[in-house]
Image (cartoon, rainbow, N blue to C red; front, side, top):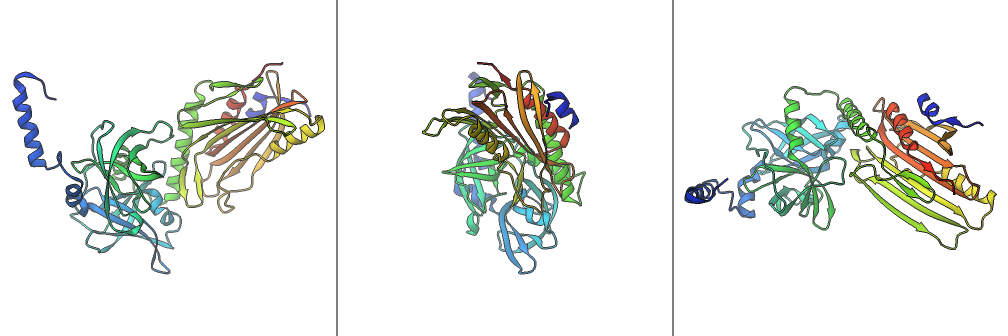
Length: 434
């Protein structure tokens, strides 16, 4: 088969000093004395705000038993509740099987209805059946690193607790902003509030990495969701997820493609390097007793977007593997490359209920002085029309004793963006003839 051109391939597819010191001292003193927050202890914070806290339950209707638990809190006096999307995701996909309840500090169980979701930032708003509810204000404060934070929630269904921690800024290595918290978050605390001394919410508990490392959703995203629900109250949350995933992938892929990809050298090849801060990269070389040398370079997003317990998306992942024949011979070396080309590692969700089978287009593609054998594969999301998982695999065919195999994985993208990004990706490769 004659190689086709790269373009053809993808086109087819404040106090001051001096006299004000006394005044400032008095102002601060008055604030401390009458607000009761600047010198608040952990015990005082919990005592003052515990009646704002809730346990969120997803209950299986058939057995009338808890299926999932999390935490939440009132955000206004009309009974509106904030929590994580992942806490209530079972209800989103199976509303006939699961109902939402919340439990107040007096132990009373209440019904709740889903108002809106932000699947990208893992947030949800519920409408409770109580009125004149005590609530937590949303902070508009910009914090410095080291500020004390109080994290509240219901860990392991043991009752509401409070954990003192430290604010460590916004993470730089995740696609979606997270507050890095030095504090122990445990299962069941998801969706609970993290507050500063005045009781205002600085973030929503979302995840833990263990060893007293936790992550919060910044409060600004909750404010956005609260504002959205004032004008929009969806009745089909599957459509909401599809729309949010579509807008999100379009935004980050377009940003990445707005400029040439950064590159690095891997043997005789120029290859895509770390494309963005939200990717982490590793490398390794193995020159063992095997009859070939193997060098691997790998980059991936750290956090996917949670959809439900068996489906996540939003992944970018790619690797380059350089092979050099030591003592194999042309035929055996070709079989080695073919095995890696035909069985790429993808680490994608694999439920047949959620995806069609992969449909692949295999061809030979030329770019500059490189000839690739390529496989461009797509599978469609059954519940989210217009979104696909994509796997692109390419192997160089320029030399009999050396080859580069690269694999690119994109999860939850449009067909158009899959094709454009793949073209941009392959267009970053170059080969310097030895």
